[in-house]
Image 1 (cartoon, rainbow, N blue to C red):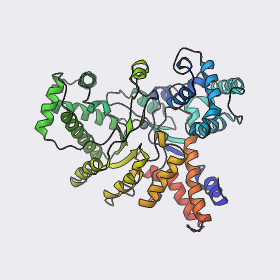
Image 2 (image 1 turned 120 degrees about the horizontal axis):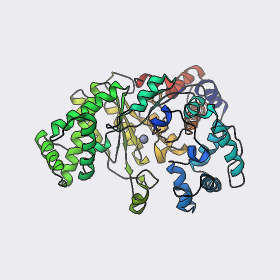
Image 3 (image 1 turned 60 degrees about the vertical axis):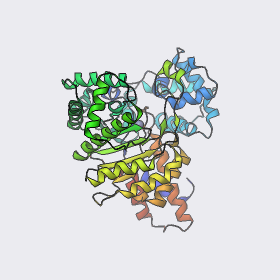
Image 4 (image 1 turned 45 degrees about the vertical axis):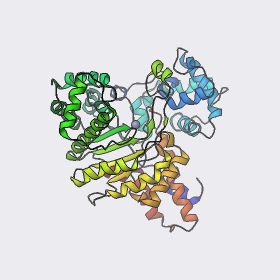
Amino acid sequence: MKNETAQQLYHEFAKDMPIIDYHNHLIPEQIANDINFENLTQVWLYGDHYKWRAMRTNGVNEDYITGGKSDYEKFEKWAETVPYTLRNPLYHWTHLELQRYFNVYDILDGKSARKIYDECTAKLQTKEYSVQGLLRMRNVEAVCTTDDPVDALNFHQQIAKDGSDIKVRPAFRPDKAMAADDVAGLNAYISKLEAVTDLSIADFDTYLQALKKRHDYFAANGCSISDHGLEQIYAEDYTDAEIKAIFDKIRSGKDLEHTEVLKFKSAMLIYFAIWDHEKGWVQQYHLGALRNNNTRMLSQLGPDTGWDSIGDFSQARQISKFLNKLDTEDKLAKTILYNLNPADNELMATMIGNFNDGSVAGKVQFGSGWWFLDQKDGMIKQMNALSNMGLLSRFVGMLTDSRSFLSYPRHEYFRRLLCNLFGEDVENGELPADIEWLGKVVKDICYYNAKNYFSL
Ligand SMILES: [Zn+2]
């Protein structure tokens, strides 16, 4: 922390606020069964494509990353990589996570690997280190997972029935239901949808009916958030007749023209958004990833294994057209926009100001630095753009967007950066040294804004 004001803001106002982690990729089954991970590799390296990328970059063979080597051998390669991650967020995250969960203050490297592995693995066997225990350790009040519309949500039901003190809610992520680039894949998905809805989906109206049924089912199971992972917003003009014809073509198994794909995606986004508005949900759009760049590794390991990057898609006009269409019809739900390309920061910070209607503070939000931008520089730039062009004070703050139960110190990381910004401004004479007021704003951004914004 850079100065006394920042330290005071962090320790007196930010540190003890509970965490509302409103978007992540935790596995509901693991929470429902409150499992203990067998060892440090399984809780820390399995599924963590950030670490995998760093290991590959450091020249580690894939056998030690996603291959058949033992859990300890994989950990050792990670430990040897850690010193080389200096100035990457992984370096800070790694040591914060060792400190906050395991009380380990050693630097992780090849020399300390064995000791740290054994010490942490032993702790992971105890009740305190079950996955719900790990969430409790970081004062997590609520988590929202990311779920497909065909998901049964049985684990969410189990968690609710067991009466956990941590709220675990699903989020509706219908990306596959609009992925018309791959007609065969979409038809396979429609078969799954038929199975869970008991509907025979021969036409577009029935397709909508089936998806709406799942949207209702998610709501009945405590869902109040949707999420979309897209290269960009699709906002082509279309007619109902065109969409019906495109859907018939999909069902006949014929590939679509590019414009048909765009029209179909545009229509689906509007339907989902209207349902979100009807139910008072928050809709989230994660925009701008260029995914699966390496086809050789995609065929070997599947998606989300560390072969994605920042894309350079054009964003502004289509977001504007999409939000405007919804706003014009008074069907715009609370909305959070996340960009992956930092060049879009100011674009997003000004776009959100176009569609606030006075119904709720910060109705349209510029989401926290995401994925490649979830690091010191990325978060500071996001907060500065939001400060300069919007109201930082109404920001719903941080989320992990993580697959790991050990990622919660990222909220601490964010809170420290936030307090530093305020502290520096006070030291520079740009903000009054009104600790009560600044402290209130800090608490709002860390907790209360999200608590009020999301109906959890
Ligand atoms: Zn996500």
